[in-house]
Length: 324
Image 1 (spheres, rainbow, N blue to C red):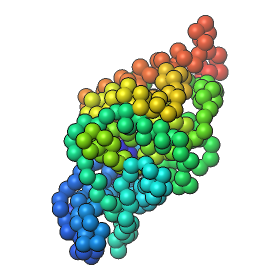
Image 2 (image 1 turned 90 degrees about the horizontal axis):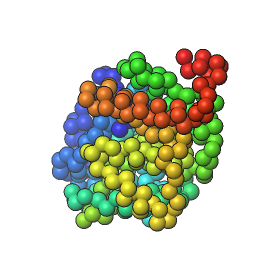
Image 3 (image 1 turned 180 degrees about the horizontal axis):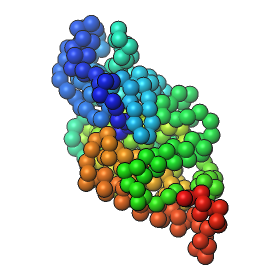
Image 4 (image 1 turned 45 degrees about the vertical axis):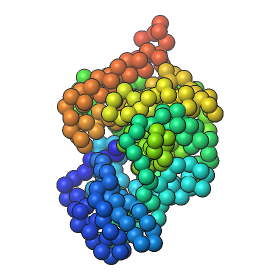
């Protein structure tokens, strides 16, 4: 769940699938899945066996919360899967990156057999613990700016907050920057690869066990607390199919679980709520969900202000001016 797009960047995914199938000797078996950003077609090949084509819906994704070329997302998915597979983590094995004459890049990956049996959330937690315990890959990530993570995160949150403010003028301000910096500084851990889109649609299971995690478009390298805070927020939306309590239980089998009510966790939870509110305001318009997620952002902002500011002060005049 990453983006919004101008109409002129749209891709005729059916035509692309047919052209690639003809050129590469693939047999099209129909639609395997689809999301906001990609369409997934199941295909067969005499040598490669069952596979999937992951075709971008747009060439360039432009949104209020990050702009990126779809080719970078395809490259990122392949490089991350190629790094994690040999470590024993469940991913869809990358096979080829196919570049069309017009420059569009499409992913070909091994098909992962899966079913609709609900996943054991503890399996998801064990996966995240293994992911966060592994050395992150040297991969250029499409949505991560170079340099210090805290600086990048604060800027991204500020930009997202400003864009949501255009949709919801009553949205409270963010805390002063120095208070945000202090909250993030208070929870310093080694940075790891984060998936940041852990939900039912991206978790392929077989008989209740996790078979593969797909769609690494949102990936960042940062503090694991951000991942678990996002899982907690995603779990509030029933169609995400996430049992946060079970995920944390599985995670705790090998790694300590952080405080998801800390000031830093509230910042990461707010980042999730604001992102989702923007999605439902613009990318996948849904007035009811946009209202719910905007209200959630307001609630988290209230909690955050209470957490980062001493209870017996109203804030300095400098801070009040910065908020205005």
